[in-house]
Image (tube, rainbow, N blue to C red; front, side, top):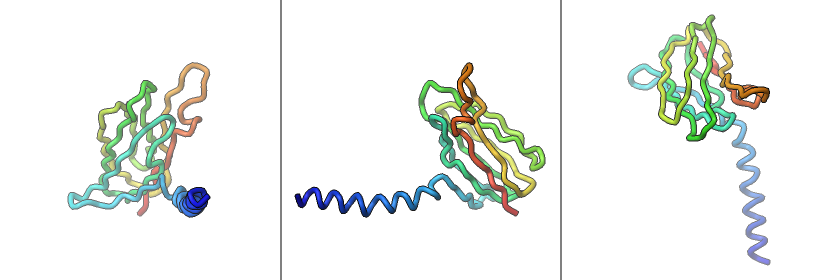
Length: 136
């Protein structure tokens, strides 16, 4: 009986902590390193990007190190924001790729995987998307 009570107490203590942290889990705020570059690492998995919300500063170089988890499903990374000087299409593999750009205009820009198989929902429609927020 004591073991059950202990287990229950642990569950009741940990569950609220994990729920509270989940809202910020997918957000990454980049800082400028000593070389003047904002660096972000992204992992693409089965219909998700992690992180799926990135915050960077305008007019500061950004370097995204991105890879997909080892699986058979192909993925890519698309970020089209011509008004901010961004035009990216990158096929992904389990080997990291480096994407470099400088966002010129503050705003929120959608990134996603545009893969689709036959008549099934696209990867974007299945939740494989995120937001790049560019701040002044």
